[in-house]
Length: 116
Length: 289
Image (cartoon, rainbow over all chains, first blue to last red; front, side, top):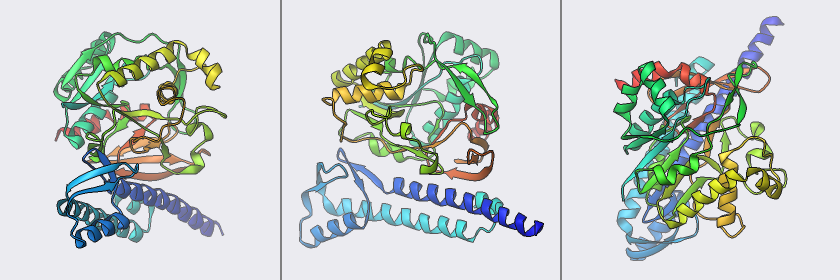
């Protein structure tokens, strides 16, 4: 029983560390998905990516106004350049998220979690 | 418009803010790639020279600005882990509003000396069309279970708390008025305590900045831009190790149990100041490489 109890405590410690690592990883990626441009701040998410792509497909590529995280109107001179930048940031951040998440998911002890 | 980071450091008998500012400065400079200046006082400079770290400071800081050491009656208990260790010490934090006069930059990011910038995220904010931005949210490393109501509001019935750990501002008439107002609130802290119903026994910049912002915004909470939430560890946690933008902590559940955790490439407020100072040589050596 004693060794079973120790195992449970070890697992409890592991889960605590895992929860903190996952939380801080999520927050790091959220920060990476923030983009400041032309005096505004954008959150790069699927909604923004879709909206920008839609505008470009409708041939609205220059002098486009988009609302930022504070719903302030921000003028984007070249929407294709903006699209490329937000797509690049999105995929860089989500790939990093995937890689780092895999590392902590595979880690099976507190030691390997903090080294991940 | 020139831009840069400013850090205050005023040593007391217990805490070596000079060392903390050097570490905070070296990380801010590396990760944001902007100049960093130090605002300090003759006593702290003398100690830095005696301790042999003034040379480090001269290499890291763009400018070392000598100001007057603030007079204070602020005494606060600082913890060093969850065991009850720590000390009562003076908090020489009452001259933060002088930053408007002392900063060498037109656009300034003011950070606490225990705020470690481990990413370039704050670079997104230099060109935001807003003269003054303060963080609106405290974000505990564990989560809501260690966050109290007084981390969100200045009192039980008070206005929202802003976190003066990170403040970005453009030097202009508006921000001059703001910082003058912060100073006025500090001078009349007890009176404002009656009006805003907070505990005025220990002066807090967070509260003075929150009230000044509330007043300047027409006695309303502002929905303008703010800096990102301040990810924080508390002083009952301990900074254990550092390895290239990666901090390892022992995080307490407030019942004397610790869990290990790391933060990498994410800005973090390390409230256990004694544990920062313990790691000074290791961090400096690693960053100097």
